[in-house]
Length: 181
Ligand code: 2AM
View 1 (tube, helix red, strand yellow):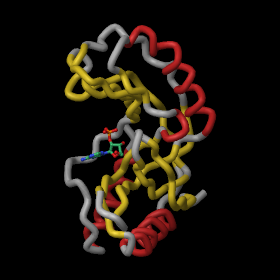
View 2 (view 1 turned 60 degrees about the vertical axis):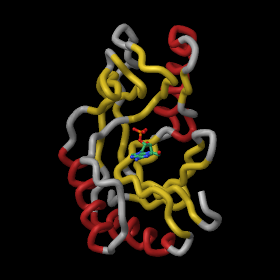
View 3 (view 1 turned 180 degrees about the vertical axis):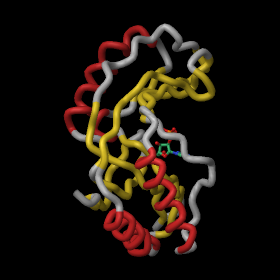
View 4 (view 1 turned 180 degrees about the horizontal axis):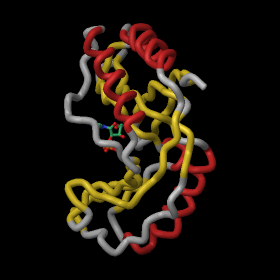
């Protein structure tokens, strides 16, 4: 990446209890997953809403204004984890993720954020929003169909964050805004 550029994305940070529970589950499953699995660090687990990619340093204040505006008009809501899924599929996966029960509030938040980014002229990855929590990536495509899912959990979606993606899969929130309570 060029000097002065940062790899950024907007996401919901997960509460510590859920990150810890998912980290314990990752630890139990890591032996069964065999070679070539890269488990996402529990401290950086997140739900991506909009992926921005490499951005110039000067974009940070503008992106901060977008995050602040969107968070300031959206109410916090509850989310519920669902079953495991994979990209491209659970039977032939390069990415293992945890799904979420359908949430109109989550869809509305992602749509508001993306519309606001578009109106501000900030480019983002245009792939349709598909809510998931990535747990692991695999060097080779493999079937994960037999994997036991983590127990279902409810958590509060009450913060929006601008994250930076750093080398070695390290995801760090740079700015965090509370949703309305
Ligand atoms: P993923 O976990 O499903 O790959 C940081 O890379 C975050 O942004 C990850 O959660 C990643 O989703 C998401 N993301 C979305 N589009 C991306 C892209 N084109 N390249 C890298 N990450 C992307």
